[in-house]
Length: 209
Image 1 (cartoon, one colour):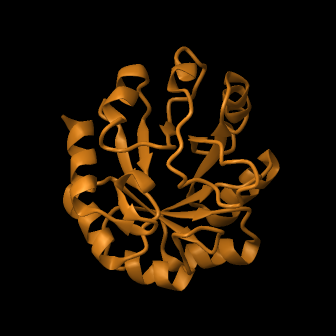
Image 2 (cartoon, one colour):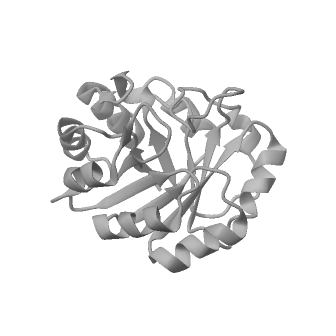
Image 3 (tube, one colour):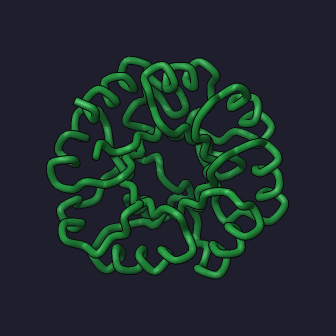
């Protein structure tokens, strides 16, 4: 099956329109978390107004107030990109009723094993490259990990790949592994938070052949 495509770190209406026009399956918005692509829940709600499809609120160790705001804003999915332990992931699922994506930083095969422990609580696992040491921003660094470490790993059916994906290397990624979801942010930008419509379209066309 052709993987789903998520364009993440959207912060401008024109970029949302570009992602929708290109045929992206999921739209991601980093809400109230440390990021150069950060938007408030209110601004994100305005950006997803009228969007017919999957909208993902990307959060980092969200408290219950933020969870409630995400639900009220009308998101369909919530992504946990922090250090949320397994019980908290289950709490988020129960409190929000949203589809839960748990992002896990990966550098080695041991990290992949750790990621699979979330399978029972999260609907999706997202394997992302580890952030540089001392960096508070989770994801969006344009870094990739060794995708070949995923070959033969005992991954669940619904898992996604993130970290350094762009139109030039997504074909390589697909030649090594077959994730159910491909997640790109900095790889389709001209600068942090400013997407490039041509790169988005090229990414989608490369994935879908």
